[in-house]
Image (tube, rainbow, N blue to C red; front, side):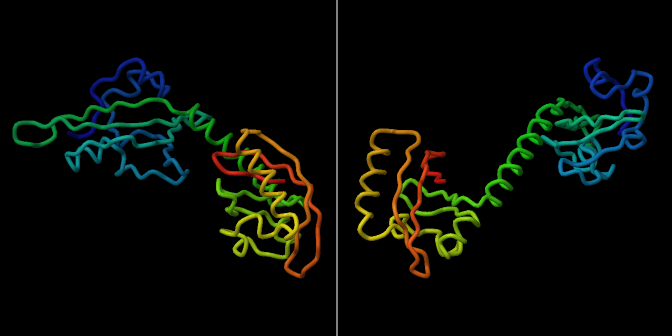
Length: 219
């Protein structure tokens, strides 16, 4: 009831980088850990899952804690559950804490996030026109390069059908070409056609179009 650690299996000790004498008999409140939330913000001791389970008498589920012990250079991310065990008088007699090491998963997520950021920067800074449509051909994204070339903001393009920017006399040709791509399941195609900008200027586009998650991405 005082949040004193009574027992630990070897896997828990190994994950936390502690020996049994360093952990057993210590209160969770007194452990000198550097702990953060999943977003990197400080994790108050009072909100540690075992202590909340003691206070609320309710299980604490799937809490992510980034833990760095004394003398450790690396932070370990844990997915923690704390289950209060109730006595006959409905008070908490003990709390069973279980956790798994999700550090590698977190690192993989961070690497993916970095790659996504790099890709976004490349797309946003590209001079090429890059846009995405839904499966019906309506714009759902346009990069700044497309906005500059067409003289239309992304907000003005969103929801508009791609054929609306194609020169009138080429619309049926473009529609037929891309209808065949869809019908035949061709992953990537190349097509050239003229478009009109807001100011009425004519541009010829050489367009690579590929499938992405049920929609179309164009460069």
